[in-house]
Length: 197
Image (cartoon, rainbow, N blue to C red; front, side, top):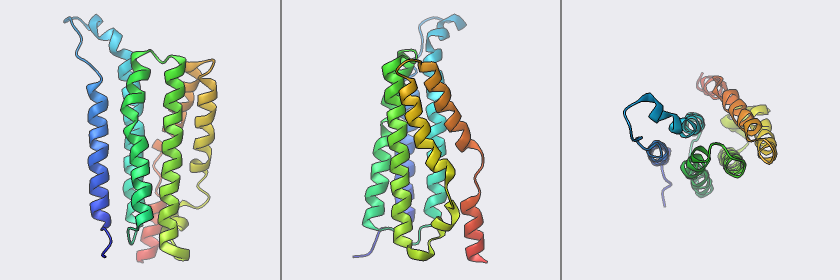
């Protein structure tokens, strides 16, 4: 039986991610009233949306680059990809609960847990691709020591623990990790150029 092409896998993932972003923005209900003061209660919801939009965008960007290193799609890659999409699909719920409750402690802890599980799922997908490529894996060469991938889960755990006594400290940690991944990472592009040359 022929395997699924990576183009189809990427198209499916892109569609799911687009739906996730759409659901998140729908959490921002139009306020009653025509003054700017009517927007004030929406500020926590908007801020949580911005943070989650950044995270979903980071995952989409890195997922796109990672699939470019994939030469074939195996069953383990398909399931690992669905596992990642499962945790990403919980972003709207965690984002909405946190925003509507003004970054309260339990919603902030749940948000951190979803971030942690999405990070673990991304790592599992990454490893599934590396295993499928064998010892000459372009992705293995590209990620190197992957210090951001190793530090991020530890910071998510720190954020979850922090949310037990200070939701703002937890949010600061979640924002820091997002900013860490916003810095352009050209490792995969560089590795692909070396392979093609």
